[in-house]
Length: 361
Image (tube, rainbow, N blue to C red; front, side):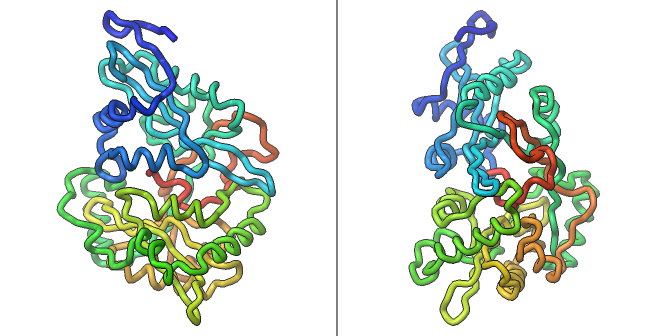
């Protein structure tokens, strides 16, 4: 497919191929830095875009002068609504080389990729930053709402000092590169998710626990979009993720696994945050949820940040554990429907999400 000229050469838009991955990784590194792991490795790309249990990521590249100058990828995802599977994609990993910025490639690659997935996808969602949001809105995305993030200080004095420092710099997101001398991994005492899953004694009963927890989520969220949980999905999402350093807090009673937390230590400016991505407990087992929150407080980090599905045992227990949602915080969720839905997907109340469904990875 020929298009406008870049310099003296036309560019072509085509499907992303396996042979493109080294050049795509280089482009993403240059345009978006190292991403959540600090570097964009082939192993991470393969885990995210090839080994995803929901399917391989559809993608397009634009070429000019024999080089990849733009890329657009959609991460496959599946929600359930009642008993129906809702095929979705998350708009991720888009980059345009500075030489061709302003030529409409972001819009063209996005709209062409939307056309290609229309036959088997009914919903697109993502959590854009302020720079990319206007472009998405122009292409038919709608703001769903700001997903609230709950915080809980573990080291209150250090947490207060860190917030004061962030406010003083004007960088309340903590994304500045000026803080780089702290090793969050060294501060966290929990075993890794990979270690948990590789230890048969630790993970025995995990699949059964997840199945019961998912049945409970289905009962409270039968009329909402939610990610169905399975052992295989959670192993991929947290145990197999290269470089993301997910950790586990597990609860046992009489030798039986009763609950699991997945989260990771990360820097937020001068603070070390434990991002609590997912809590898995059986329906009605609030005691285990409280026990897990007590365990999370032993992480060695400065504070915990999380979002838990409304109405879940985890969300109820979080309130008792002292988690609070500060004003003007959260992640902006946007969505674009490809096919009609029986609920209003542009209303945040139509979604039942955990932070693990939304965090950038």
